[in-house]
Image 1 (cartoon, one colour):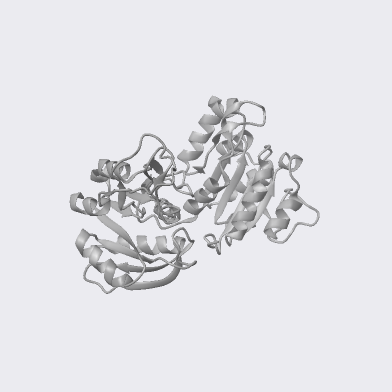
Image 2 (cartoon, rainbow, N blue to C red):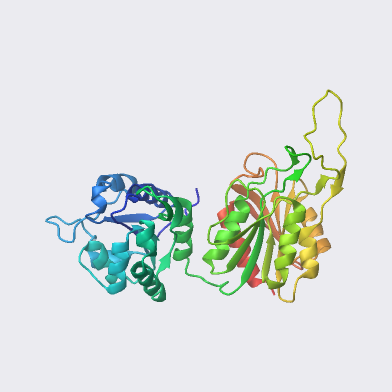
Length: 400
């Protein structure tokens, strides 16, 4: 697991919602990713979950009262307000949103909200009617005007038995929002980044397809890094194992033809195109409308080539747009990638070694090379995909 939040202090405020129990898993995940997590529970939150649960997963004392006979060192509201890199409130009730919007400070959490100058991220969770009430909507609008960030809420079954908007956002979506909020370098602000991700599934008949083992992890890491740098992000995604960040525009594309159509339709609006998808090189020339039955006889499958999406994008891009390709190679990594860089007219290519557990398609790490026209290939060794995504955007930023 990448220590994405290493050396960061995150104050997690937990309010009185049924979703309070989910905040404990959130605190654990933040801590596992390297953050120092300080937890503050309102009086209502303590009706749903005990402070000891958070202390066990974070290794830090949970804050419960403004005034305590024996306060833990360093948990006074001013000290924490100055120390925190991010103030995350999840679940955030209608009550805390109203307090924050109108400067009410009547407990530890609301008082610290007034004192902090760190980014504030709210994860609302409440009944649909409460969320949609004009007062709540006005409070959220006011907080956004002041720079507060929001993640969710999601839609689904609520604790009250109704179905609608108001659920606390999924844990992974909150973790993504935390990663974006903590990143201070917004060097891609205003730039539009299109990323292709995952495999293609080329049908043979209604139940079978030609595919590959691409998981979409690289595309997801790239999309999150682009969001952290404040880019507008569109992910054209095949049928991936890991979903792209919810904050990105997600365009599903199962086949290479669908992926090509989606990319070309958006190419003129892009500043950066990163072709991280493992596009199927071939498709079945004839697709059976019925399931092909096993009858003991051999079958011959005739394959037709699929379009080279990244080469076409490089040829058709508008001036100033940068196109980055990927090359999965089993041997002669740098030389094979250099040939593709020139042949396809790319601004940069990332070559991945495939083979073995560490470099398998779908693994969390990759032995990678980076190549740009007129420069010597750079070996990055075996690198996790989060770090690789960061290196790729650092290089894109420096492209002429």
